[in-house]
Image (cartoon, rainbow, N blue to C red; front, side):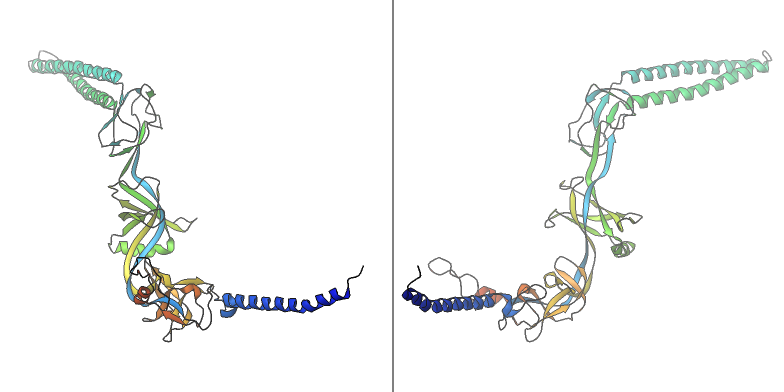
Length: 410
């Protein structure tokens, strides 16, 4: 059944109105997106978006000659200043452990005791042999004196005197060997007392009381590490080595600062102690070693730290590090001219410290660069220089009623 003619006329009458409404809605949507999006203001080739005809609030700094500390950064590993595996020098039963795991010890402290009885017996034997030979020597010397007197009286032959003199010399030699045997036995006996070879902190013991230990055991009884002072090893590229060597040849003591794993908090300060005598051909780096007192024991062996080697200070044209951006042209800054327009200016950078970076080319002394607000900038954009007073004007205002009220932006 076909629709009535009246119904078809009604549809044709409201259809143009529907099309008109849709066209108007599409136009409003396009205009709103054009105002909010990048099509109106254009896109900065370095990532920022701006709107034409608007001033952009920014902070600026002036390029000027300033002292910049030459700081070299690296990742370092904390290492014990000395590490010793304590081993027994004699064989025997481990009679006593005189330390606790992880204990701090002083050089000379008793760590362990080996059963000394067999070594005491050896010493007693050596002393007995020494006493016996000493008595024989004394008797032989008396006989020699008597034989010499009789020989002068022509009572005995010269051969008998010579034989007695040879016996005395033989016993004198025995006296020396006897003394060496006694000294050796005393030394062996002293080795039954295992003492700390240096001041440091002990690790976990590797053998318990009652076990047999011997001098050939490479594992040892315990490991002791010297952590006061302590050292840090780190590598630098070979290109940075000449600056370090120049300071060392001049007799300068180079300061080394350590920062935590987030590179935010300084945890220690020390000095450079040594440079390795060769460059690693695989990495093109050289190993350096720094020393730290570690009085608070904040550094622990095998800990990873951020290292900053202070090579020296020199005057250079500098800007804040926040001013230098990176793009397809390399490092650049947003330079602000006298009309408060910004220009993308490629620069060549030099040494850098925690606040400033040296500009070797691309800027002149006194030129202004943007330090904050760079994300909305493009070539030729007009900026408004924000000052401390402007920030204060835009700060929250506390009215009489006590509730904070935001001031309207200028």
